[in-house]
Amino acid sequence: MKPPAVKGQRPRTLARVAAVQALFQSGQGDNPETVIQQFIRHRIGGLPGEWFEDGRLPAAHIPLFGKIVRVAVAQQDLIDGLIAERLPEDWPMNRLDPVLLALLRAAAAELWMTDGPPVRVVINEYLDVAHGFFDAEAVQLANAVLDRIARVLREAESAPTDQS
Image (cartoon, rainbow, N blue to C red; front, side, top):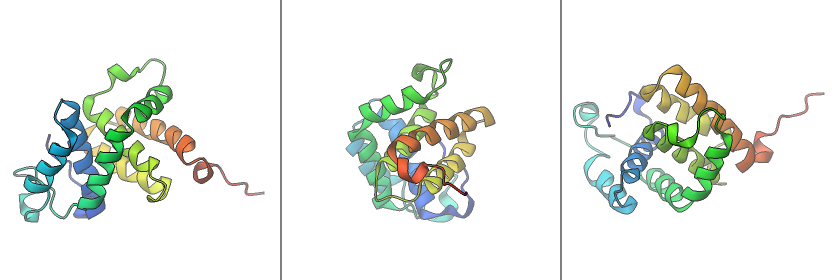
């Protein structure tokens, strides 16, 4: 899976791209810890010009990458339940593209982290990543599902503010 173009190649954004790719790969049956180590050794780092030629993600923030993948794997059953419950009725979990499922898992894992960035930052970052992989319909689906998950995992932060 070739990484999508990400504006400015920001380290934390690149970590999220790498996490989506690693979760996709581990979802194909590879051991998640092995995948993390392979990514760190062979895909993260390198020169910026190598970005598209060989799938490298130069300057990706390694600690964030590892944390997202580990949380997504450790909490996968709960995260998958959150995703499944928030999908439209006519779009069951088994209909999701495997890359879209990996993206939703990564984003939900990051929303799971109470010490992570604000909800809007997490959702916007993953929507930027989604635009590199998917059409508008899939991006809209990801946005809706992530917004619903955020309302559960970070209720206080996601609650509308009273402007009266």
